[in-house]
Length: 247
Length: 254
Image (cartoon, one colour):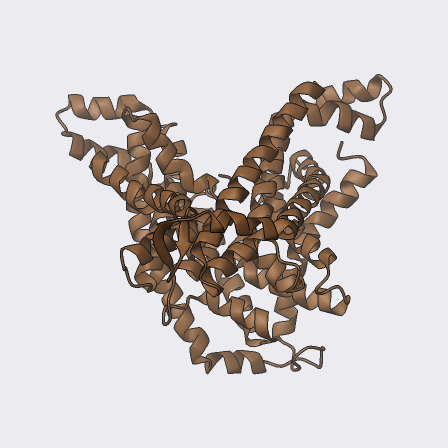
């Protein structure tokens, strides 16, 4: 039985992922030719802007989510009576299709004349991925001893100083998980950008989708996927270095 | 901390922010106009009832959702059992938790690569296979965290009293996991029913699911029937959520 279960995941998960890596070294055909080529990787050089846009949005949205998510988690944790109810309120939107929620934003942003701008995309992405920040922050704050915060205040730190210098470092595992979730999800997203942003300002996810489904250039799509994955790994490696040199 | 005015302000604002677009969609579903508010009407609900395109997509989504829920729940529970109650290799652990970490676009395009290379027709069945794979990882996550909390001595007692392995699992382990399995199955259905990204890669003509249909409607025009449909789905989701909250009050906190 264990063999069958393992076999399922090898067939439907591991082999497909290896196929993508394999495809990135092949020649474009219909959909691919089985001859070695680096054409896909050469063409990824033309995708500098989508890569930068994805990185930029992912960075901005991660920090916005932290900025909004932290106070939300604090409000939920410190409400003794309504805690379960407020947590339920954060999770409930998950039960509505996210396309529908994006559609709601489309209506609002059109009224505000923001549709098609980077602001629209940032608002949409922050909205969609905010719960992924709130939930890990909530579970860290639940275990945080609030007396530490009051000690900082007693010793003369302002509210903001105590939060930045004392509370956030104390709950850094939750902060890290939240930032990681939001960064990865935003980086790979193409739906929000497609529906709220301008068609010309592709994020890397849209470029990958188009390579696979529109221009049927699998080696290009596969190369973009491999490069994106490596880029994400680099970002985390730099993040880790920066953190360990900072403390 | 919650006494600081800016924490309060941002915190409560964020909770409202989460419901803002949902509220707009619900209000607009009762609008008699297309874009601007022109007065109350139920016209879009009537139009929805005669929209066969959306009905077909809904049926496809329900088919995919139900079938993949049944199989991913079975698969996920088996995985959870192996993870918690038996010794498994690091490779096995990595493999079964992989869908939790890789973005759904990668799941979608890698599944597409497999199906095309083995000439598996792109249909609701290919979507279902991909859904079973990624939903089962979430089922395993939910069920294994509950299983890890169960007292193993109960199972040992059952075996001491002469129960076979199979009898122990069916008669002792599964009943204790009932709540977690229900919660996991619902999560699995929600993931499958809501999925746009994987379905857009692994689906073919004639297998358009509801999210794929909604996406094309939202992208290419204003179709207020979506507002009506979304309102109905939202109310259905809340009702199910409240029913489950009664069955297992911990189902949502995981």
